[in-house]
Image (cartoon, rainbow, N blue to C red; front, side, top):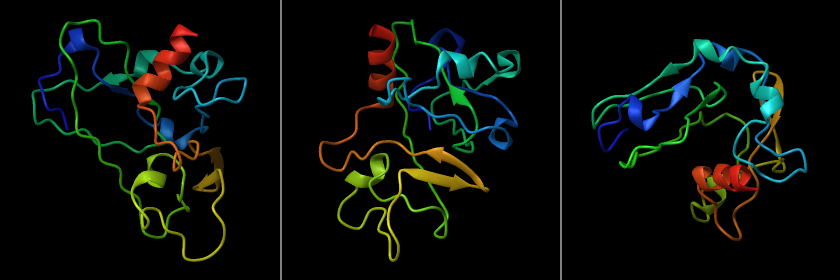
Length: 152
């Protein structure tokens, strides 16, 4: 949900319709470190002319499948793009303990009742890497991870 108006000058989030049905892309750099974004080689395989950018007034809500290719260009306007980000998953979905921000939600966040947590996730029979285990030092922001890659 956008907490302020988000217009084209602010480079709102874009989504690539139907991409959640295609290949699943890692968000790790070639050296194995967490990048928080796809590699340039993976991006080059996409038809970015099909991206739909989701601007709107404060209070606008966008909803998309987490496996859909999504992201935004840098916000070069003087205005921030504050938002409220919520994630939801079915109770019978893949185990998510200590993957992504779920590892820092408290002792019950992402609790697994049987089996072992895995860094690999299975979504509709397709495998992909989950985010790193941030339970010990806390998660970086997604924008911070991406900026480190751009600066590095």
